[in-house]
Amino acid sequence: MSLYKPQTVNCNGETFKVYLSEEKIRTRVADLAKQLNRDYSGKKPIFIGVLNGAFIFLSDLLRHISIPSEVDFLKLSSYGDEKVSSGEVRDLKDIDANIEDRHVLLVEDIVDTGLSMKYMVEKLEQKNPASIATVTLLHKPEATRHDVPLDYVGFRIPSLFVLGYGLDYAQEGRNLAQIYILDEGESRSDHT
Ligand code: 5GP
Image (tube, rainbow, N blue to C red; front, side):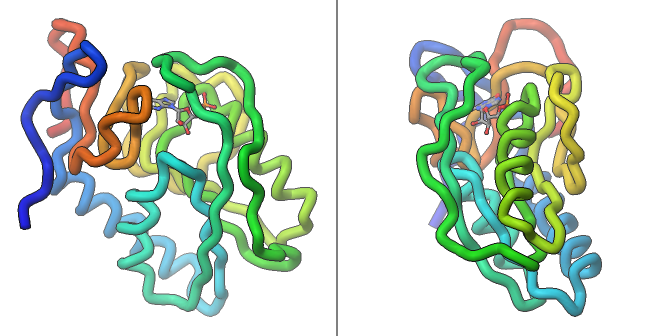
């Protein structure tokens, strides 16, 4: 069965072009998992995925995890239908697991300003885990304003809106197998 991976895509009236190919993502996700298997050897971490965006990344990552582990999810308010952050974070769903004395791996799709990640780390710290580490597939370093440690980063990307592989634009585009970037008609170096 073939994956959905066009070269360009039109979503809500905007054009996006491929930025990270399926192969590039697959290789990097496997590398991150290898690093986690090594770093958490002898421990049983709990992966906490941030809904909705991280569901594809986390499911691919987990299939390379060979140490004992558990999974839970939390959900925050998203960008809504916009391409810029509202600057506000709201809880929509808390985790169900008891993470006291557990090693937590908080898994995000993307860190932009860093506000959401900082908020979640501070909130989870109140539940007294043994440790918390952050994992994000994408990071926009130029946009990051909030000081938050990022322990495992898949790709550093420019501050442009991206789509696909779980990331949406007004709830569309999560099903794309590659990561697409807004085509502003400028020539930028891409990583495909
Ligand atoms: P932050 O709080 O770091 O500013 O934003 C984090 C959240 O904003 C991410 O979990 C994601 O939901 C959303 N976000 C940030 N940048 C992008 C982007 O380029 N594309 C999409 N689809 N969502 C983004």
